Amino acid sequence: MFDYEAYRIVSRSMQKRHSILARVLFGEEEFHEQLSLDFGRLIDNRGLTEIQQRRLRAVLYELFPQAQEKAKVDMEIMDRDNRVCHAKHFPNYFQLVRDPGEISASTISAFHNAKNDPEKSRTALVSSNL
Image 1: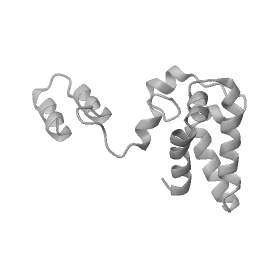
Image 2 (image 1 turned 120 degrees about the vertical axis):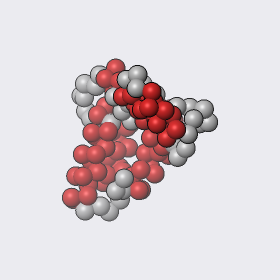
Image 3 (image 1 turned 90 degrees about the vertical axis):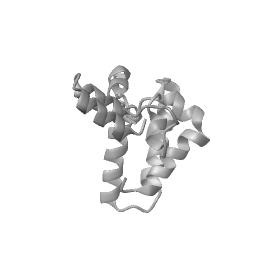
Image 4 (image 1 turned 180 degrees about the vertical axis):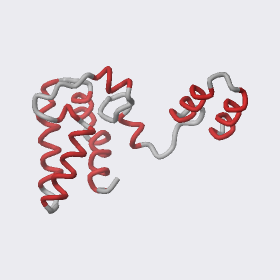
């Protein structure tokens, strides 16, 4: 959010080098080191100040904990929490629009929170533009 260049590089990594990032996200151990190296280059080779490097490193490793050496990541929890580091959810964070007919997570949440209240359900439906 605060570093467009980092966002662009991470986004493109899924498109241009899909095999490496996707394998890491799916848990294939042999690509763990490659992701770590890519993040290291992203952090160190852009002329960032030390403070900017620390901030970017903290953000990247929080978003992608499996890039850290010897990290133990429960991918079921990452899936449950819709985390960007899960291969199923990664593309959602880089889409500008959703596919027609696809229901957004916020709409599902609004319906869940309506708890059989017809007025709240109607409001959720209207605000979702379905």
